[in-house]
Length: 85
Image 1 (cartoon, rainbow, N blue to C red):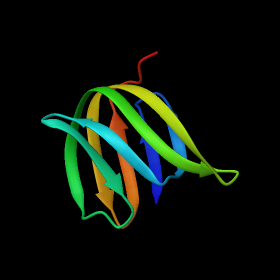
Image 2 (cartoon, helix red, strand yellow; image 1 turned 135 degrees about the vertical axis):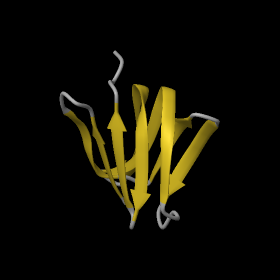
Image 3 (cartoon, rainbow, N blue to C red; image 1 turned 180 degrees about the vertical axis):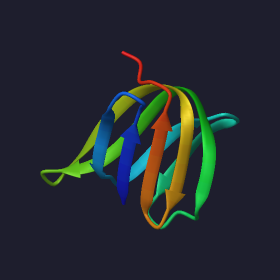
Image 4 (cartoon, rainbow, N blue to C red; image 1 turned 180 degrees about the horizontal axis):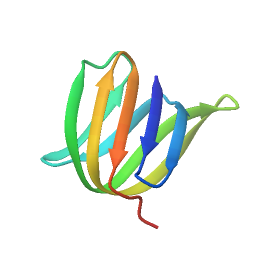
């Protein structure tokens, strides 16, 4: 599935992923391939991405300061307020 994370200032991440975990407003949630359509707010916290890289699973983390996530047809779009350091 394809994931894109953008802020008002930059395109932070773009690429194929195996799964993504988000800090939802009411608790964290995970998105896997063929997930049902979804629109949700995300709170401040850690975004955890798993992707296959050179036949190995790679784990990537971003600290997000809130925003919105949309899941539709194996594409995840995250509109983040900002990405923390």
